[in-house]
Amino acid sequence: MEFLVKKNDLFRRASKNPMTTVTADFTGMVLISGGAAGIGRAIAESFLLAGAKIHVCDSSAENLDVFLAANTDATATLADVSNPAQVEQVFSDLRNRGEGLDVLINNAGVAGPTAGVEDVSIDDWDRCIAVDLNGVFYMTRQAVPMLKQNQGGSIINIASGAALFGCPLRSPYVASKWAVIGLTKTWAMELGPHNIRVNAICPGSVAGERIDAVIERDATERGLSTDEIREVYLRQSSMRTFVSPEDVANTALFLAAESGAKISGQSIAVDGHTESLTNWLD
Image (cartoon, rainbow, N blue to C red; front, side, top):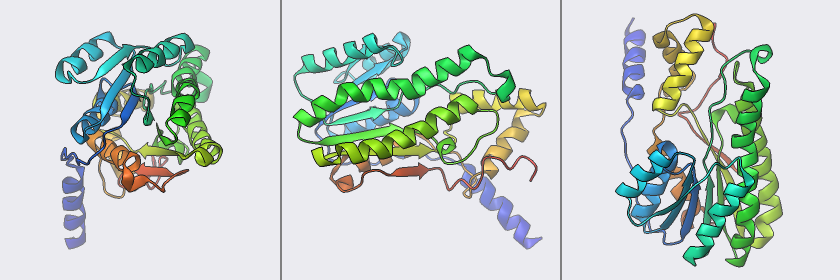
């Protein structure tokens, strides 16, 4: 009984998610896709605090307006990364700043459907792959010439804990994120001789509206309550916790700064140690 009390106390304490941001010195030019809200905004604001110059792109005009009102030193482009022409506009706007590029952070993404493979629609599959995989490629192919011109830099892909495990009912999302890990490894090899580091951050469940929506859909699909599903998601982590956007931002800043100068080709989990994504019957 004493063990159970301590275990439950640990669960309650580890589920709390303090919002802490690490500051460092970083004065380069940083481009962040999906940078106006959620993880992307946390990353952008962390880099701004560090002294960086920031350009973000986002598919939501409303989110961009809110972000720019709060961060007047940043610039932005309204763009959907799944559209190559709109990605070209992002880089045209960036080049017009005349400050080159030091860091690309491929953060834009969608959660995709929650459904068994036989119930995933072609449109839902195509949309998830278009944003979460094709968008990473479109952004990176435009960024690499600028990074080479800069004689080096950093690419950080925001992948997922789902890129390290199977994840039932999330086929298109998992497919895209596993592919991003493969690209991270490949680009690290390809671009390393040009002094360009490429890494992936694999967040666990990130506290916020997006994971709340995933949990709600999962609960509906399984005929369970949202509280039951949330408890299962928490049990997937050894620390029994969701991570915060700031946790991911801190890792991105570490990788981009001098502290990460010799780190490349890595997939770094920020997740409280995910044990499994399939423990539904535990």
